[in-house]
Structures are given as structure tokens and as C-alpha cells.
Length: 599
Image (cartoon, rainbow, N blue to C red):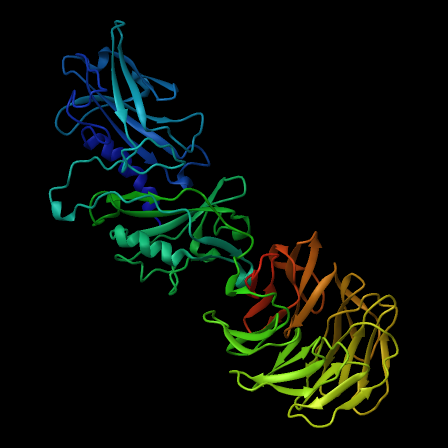
């Protein structure tokens, strides 16, 4: 369906009121015990109308069109006014000069008008007992009391938006009759704004909700969205897409069944909608009023959601849960691997069943993977161990170490800090001491490239250092770096968390650059960005998963996490960022992930 249907629908409502008799609440006189009819008023009809916001200039968007049918013995010239009183006492009075006077297709005269609820122009207290009064110029009055119901429902309810009434005469071809749709659900899915690729609004969880909705309401042929800012002011609408039954040929709904709005798919009075300003949307389903829309003039709003918040943060995907304090993690092209209390485990990067690769371990800590093995440092076990990517026999590469908590991999070796910096071949053999002894005390973290090992020394007056493999020479890159912790390297720079900030320095030294402030817990790199977990406050803590360009600039918060007692591990691959979470609850650990460029 073309976007012009939004404008055409307005014409539909006016035409329907003129052409149809007793729409909405019409029925035979006296058929309802709540009705009282005298000789002037013969009946009342109504149509609850949702106005396309783009035609409302941010004014009222919900109306009640009323037609008061009167006795043929009365001339239109005799009528002074009519009034309507809602169930909550709100009253409208419309003079004959301001009203719509007409005759229905079967010859019944009426006086009508379009009412909006001044207490809330976006709602109408429809369900309940209404009073309609007709006043003649000679002062004579008569009234009718009638119970209106929300179209599509017999229960009293007030909503921000109402359906269009469906109590209309069935068209001649009854085989095309389609009953009113339910209101489109407002729960079970989350729209999220992403700045990536020029900006978009995407959903998670919508596919299942739409599938359920369309399964019981199969004749929803057209869908669009109305867009609103933080003040709930209307901004514009999306293109309206047509597809039989399941929206299989739409552009708004992706192949996965999720919504994807881009600026080019939107329309406003000034052009495309600025999606950064969109904080709410409504889902709008349209089709023929009671039949498939052979022409767009027959289209009607059939199901409209209430306002749906567009979140700043995409809900993370939980890959694994019920874990026992997961600590460090690593990722390859197929799986995420992590250490937790007494075990090494893995799960597919798409989620699913968790596999235990090794168990009965003594505080496994840092973890790393290559193409065939998982390696870890066992803190209280004072050892470096490995196991195959699919499990099997555990191999101890080095033992009788001193509270080792970190490791890194070269192409052929495992490197770790102990009394000094040491390394051993991935297949075992003799341990080589790269640097001994270390020149300060504390907890050490390590990173490697092809030629050097880099490490941090924790504590007051900590350091960032490096040593070329086989040289035995130590170069101090940064001194007096309090609480220097997690460290990573790329082809040109060394990155670390220390002194309450994320920092970097050239591999050969130079000026220290502060990329971002705030105490952090572990970091990961890709080709362009640094990712890290930042402490906010309290214990259990509030933390954020953040990223920043390696060249500095604005910090992007990918997600916020509350009530976390353990926040060590983070890793990235080509598309996603992964991290560990642990709550105070027993087995409250999780592995979560988000697209790293979603915002």
C-alpha cells in the first residue's frame, strides 16, 4: 500500500458517516435496557476515529464522530443544537450552524459532529453510559441514554488510541467480510535506535509477537509506524508496506521478522525523519474496512498499538546462564569459552547448550584459545593447563607456580607472569624465563606480539613494561602508574587500564594518551576500537560495557548492567562483543553478547 493511504483514510471516515446508518453503536430502538428514546431522537450512531498524526498538526488524534438521528416530522431548520455527555461528565454542545446535517442512504435525517476529548486529545473515554440531547429552537429538548462499547470489545476500557468501529453493514459480498483486528501488542519486543550505518531503528523479539498476532488475525495486509519524539509529539511516519497475510514482501520487516526503519523509509513535513529524535512509535495495521482493499479509499486503521518506547540500549542476548561465577572469556569463529568456579566451559556464539570442557579445577582464571586448544592459568592450582576445543584429557604445561592469574599466547608458546615473566611451548617442554626477577611486586597482566612481551605491575607506583623475547632486557614504558591492570597491544600501541582511566602509549614509549576516565575491569581490541567494562558505583556494582576509537573521541556505552558482583571477562570478534556477568545469587552467572556496532 502506498503512503497516500494515510491521507485517503481521512476521506473514508467522512464518507462513511454520510453513507452509513447507525454505524458504531447503532441498533434497533429500545434494544438496550440502558436506552431511553422519545419522539424526537430515533437513534444514535458513532464512529471512533484515529486520525493520521501527519494530518493532525500535533493536535487531537482521537475523535468520536456522532450522528443523532431525529424524527422525520422535524425540519433541519427547527434544530438549535445537540449535546453529548461522556461517561465521566465531559460535555460537548454543537450548534446546528456548526454541525453536519444530512440524510443517510436509507432516508433517515441526522445531525452530526466530530468530537475530541479536551481532557486528553489522544484518548476517548468511550466505554460506558453516554447521554445525547437534541434541542429545538422552540426550546423543546429530548435525550437518549446509550451504552457505548469499545469497538472490538464488550468490556469498558480507555486507551490512548481506539480502533475504528466495526459495527457496520456487511458488504454485499459477504465472503470478503473480515472481522476487526485485536489491538497490536505493546509487549514482548523492544525497538532500539542504532547509530550504525547512518542510523536505524530495529527490534528484538518482534518476530514471535507478530507471528502470534497474525496467526489469529490473518487478514492484516498493511503495516507502518507512526514516529514520535521524547515529548510524544508526532514526527512523521514510515512507508506503508503491503503483503498478503505475513508481510513476506515488505521492506520494513526483515527476513528475520524484525522491524528495520531507516531514514529513507520515513516521511515528514520536511522530508525524512531524524531517527535520533524518535523516542516512541506506534505500530499501525491497515486493510479494507471489512474487506480486502480493492481501492485505497476503502482502507481503514484496523489495529494500532499504544506508544512503544524506542530504547537507547539494545537488550543483550544471553548465550549461557546459571553459571558459577564466570571470570575470563575468549572467543573464536564458532564458540565462546570461559572459566568459572572449578571448570572451563563453552557455548556457541549463537547460544544453545553449554559444554563442560574441563572440571575439578582449582580456581581457573585467565583463558585463551587458538585453533585447537583452550589454555588457562589456574590461580590456586599454581599451574598452566590446556584442553582440546571439544574437551578431552587436560594437559598440565607448567606447575608449582606462584598464584598465576594471567597468560597470553604467541604462535608457538604460552606466556605468563610468575616470579618473573615465563613461557613454555604449547606442547610443553622446558620453561623459559624471559625476565627474572621482576623489579616490583604486585599482580601482573600480560600481552604479546611477535617480538615482545608487555606487562603491567599492579599497586601504588605500578608500571607498564616490555621485553623483547630472548633479550632479558626490560624497558619501562610508564612508571608511577597506580593500579596498572589489564593490558592489550596492537601493531603500534599498548593499551591498559590504570590510574582510574583507559590509556595508551606507543610500543616504543612516548606520550601517554588518556582515552577515557573511570576505573575499568578488562579490555579487548579490534581493528578500530577499544572495548572495556567500567565500574560505576556500589556493590553489587553498576557497570557499563563501553567502546571508544583507538584514536580517542566520544565514548559509546553499549549497555548498562546493575547488581553485578563479578565483571572480569570481555572479548570481541568480527561482529559482536561478549562479556561475563555474575550476580550475588547462586549460579547467577551469565555470558552475554551484543552487536559491537549497533550504536
